[in-house]
Amino acid sequence: MNMKSSFLLLLLAVIACGGAEDPFGIVTETPSVPISELLASPEELQAGQQTIKGEAYLWRNFEFTDDPNTRLRAIVHVFTHDSTPLPSNLRVTRMWVVNEPVVWETSNFEGDRPTQPPYRLEEYAINGPEWATGTLVDVIVRVEGVSEGSALLLMPGVSIVRTV
Image 1 (cartoon, rainbow, N blue to C red):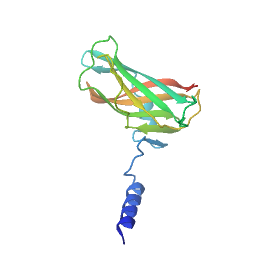
Image 2: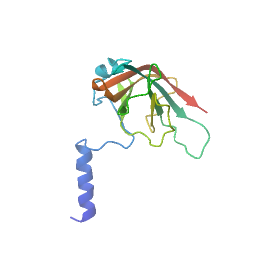
Image 3: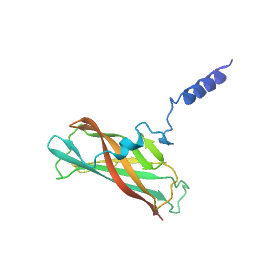
Image 4: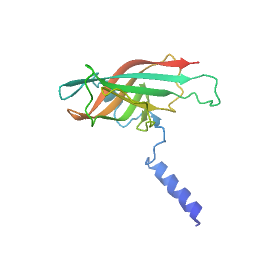
């Protein structure tokens, strides 16, 4: 067996065992956290004396450009309720967008985001599913560095908008 055949067999084995995630996440009916648990997540978290909230903006870009990609994009902001600085160790490590019974799950966020005020953290994900604009979805993120160590934060009823 030559090197190319060996590599292809190894790659197929990894994919078949579920050991490879798409670079932009997965769309699945069986996310890593059950949908019922995701949807039961709180809309506020505590980090010491601070209350942490979230907001999400989801869109599909239909503007005329050289890039025909209209796949779902998401920006998530995690912020303090009173605009006090976030803890320096606070991180968003995973996102789920629930359009029951299907979920877009990703931990691959785009880097080099614009500088945010010290009370806000922003993450940006691209190449989600091609769900219809106007669809209401629920967005959940895993936040590291809160009082519980790690917790889920729910942003319910987010509309997928269309940009033109």
